[in-house]
Each structure stands twice: as C-alpha cells, then as structure tokens.
Amino acid sequence: MRWSRGFSLIEVLLALGLTLAAGVAVTRGLGAGVRATATFSERAAAAATIVETVERLDAEAHRSAAIFTPARDVLGNSNCDSGGGCREVDFFTRDARNVARFRAYRFDAAAQTLQAYDYDDRTANGATNVRASGTPLTRIETFSAVRTPISKVAIPMLGGYTPRDIEVPLGYPDVVGGNAIVVVSAGNAALTLKHDLLTRFAPTGFGVIVATFTPGPATTPASAPSPPANATTGIVRNYVASTAWLIGPCVNVPPVTPGCGASDDVSRVREQNGADVGPGGTLVAPLGSQIVAAGICGASTSIFGAHDPTGAQFAKVVAGGATEYWTIGGDGSYVAPSGALALDKPGDPNPFATIVRNGPGWSYLTTYQLWC
Image 1 (tube, one colour):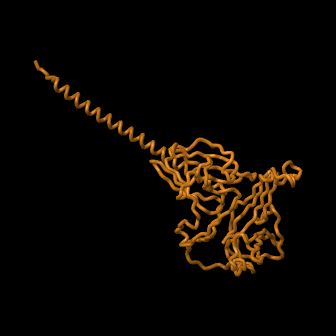
Image 2 (spheres, rainbow, N blue to C red; image 1 turned 180 degrees about the vertical axis):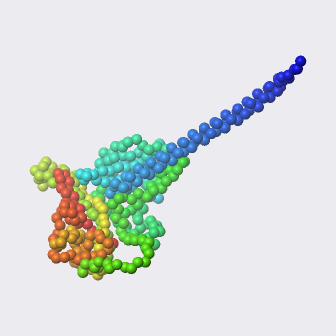
Image 3 (cartoon, rainbow, N blue to C red; image 1 turned 90 degrees about the vertical axis):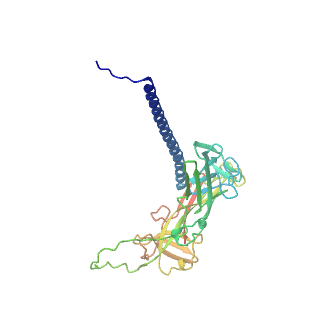
C-alpha cells in the first residue's frame, strides 16, 4: 500500500502569508494607478479651464473696437496695482444698430473665479447697469491684464523698426481704441498661459509687403503684353477707416420732442459722441507723389471715392494743399485716371464713398485717412 504525504500546518500558513502579501502589493499597485489616473484627469481638467479662459478672451478681442483696463472695476474697486497689473479687462464694441456694448471679465482671487459682466455705459463714476453674465470660470488661481503701448513691444521680425502708437478716443472714460496690446495671464497649478489681446480693427502704423517665389526652369521669354501708356510703379500706402458717431435721445428727432427743445437740456445732456477705428487697406500712389514726399499722414488727410468715364475706381486724396488720385489696391502699379473724374456718392461700390447712416437716436459717419 502506497502513502502520499500532505501539507503540514506550517506549510499551509506560510503559503497563505505569501499569498496575502502578494495580494496586498497588487492592491496597493492598483490603488496607486487609480490615484495617478485621477490626478492626471484633475490636472487635465484644470489645464483645460485655463485654455478656455484665454480662448474666450481672445474671441472677445477679435470682435471689439477697444480693449481697456479701467481704473476701477465694475464693482467700484481699484482695479490695477502700481506695476500696471489689473484684475479686470474690459471690451467695447457696437452692434449693427450702433448701440454700445461693454463686457468685463473680473478676477476674484478669493473664490479663484473669473466672472463676466455686461454693462450699458461708462461715466466718470464707472460702469452703469452692471449685471453678471453667465456662470463664472473656476479653477483660476492667478490672473492679470497689462496694457502695453505697441512702441514698447519688441517685435524681432521688424528688424529694429518701432511702430507708432495710435490712440483713438471713443467718447467714454478709460475707453481708448488704437493699437496698444493688452497682455493677459491666467494660471493654476496645472498650467499658466500668457496671451496678447489686440482688437480686430487695430491700425498697425506701418505696412510690410513680402513676396516669395521659386524660379522655374529657364525658357525663352514670351513677348509680354504692353502695359498701359500711363502705368508706372507706384508707392504703396496704408489707410484706415474712422467712424464718428453720435447717440442720444435728441439725435435725429423732431425739435418738438419732449426734452429736446432749444431751451430744454434735460435729455440733451444724455447725448454722447466719439469715434471708432474701422478696417483699412492699401492704396497705390504715383511716383513723385507730393503727399508722400511731404510725409503728410494721419488726421491731416482726407480720402474720397471717385471714378473716371471708363468706370475705373480711384481714391481722391487731399492733404497739405495737394490733391491726387490714387489706385485702389492692385499689384503695385499705378494707372492714372482717364478723363474727368466724378466723385462717388454714399453707398456706391467704391470703398471710399463716404458712408453716412442716421436713425432716431443715433447717427454715424465713416471716413478714411492715411497712415504711414
């Protein structure tokens, strides 16, 4: 008869101990993996909040006529520190009916949130009719906005050229359009981002024309078409639009309207006026242009739309006692008008036909000026 040996009690206890130790190690490993995954997800969510914050501010900038950091925030508190860092950044624009729109983003350090506010007007006492807009952005531990003139920004691609600062008063305290940059910085433990905010309509103060090409194989040149007899190589110059506006209860209403009479200033004092910067482009002036040679640019110039009998469109430029007709756009070639020119009327296809719009309570006029 054959006997088989079993396990002793000591062997069984030893095996159970080893199994328990292995189980504890595996459990700890799984727990560490779960915690690492949770930590990664938390950091990813925190980083996404910062990205969303910067993207939202950038979108606001692209549809605004002015970005500014007011002396006092929408709650009436001092907004900026001695170094120029501000807890709130504001945006100004006008809708299709020429109604002013203000939006502010205010940082609450204690709550670590960035709350959007809408308001209707700015006076010497600050924002009026302020109301919160939407839910606040959370998980923001640091935030600042610093307004910087473009002349103070180092731009390597300009090769040492310093752009000129352009400021456009818009008729409200603290609200100035132009080409200044507002640098915003938002951050938390997961991510910190800095971003330059610039309005879509900001005039640059300079123009750069770059052309690149790859030469093809040498061929026998074909006969080039003869250019027009009056075509010359021109000088490219920039222009920018400027819209002067007037709003108020007594604008474009009958004089008999209550509060709008000659001796009644109750409503008249509520009128506001200002100017916004609009889109620009390029013109081509002839060589030897008196206006370019004199270096007359900016507010001293006026541009009007005109066309010759052939239908060609031109810009009539008046500055410093000189009047010239410049080509609109093109490849850098200047073609002089053929025959007498007639000025375009508002609404004509020529972009320099002055645009005038009026309605009850509002009026605005868009004109064009040169920028060198």
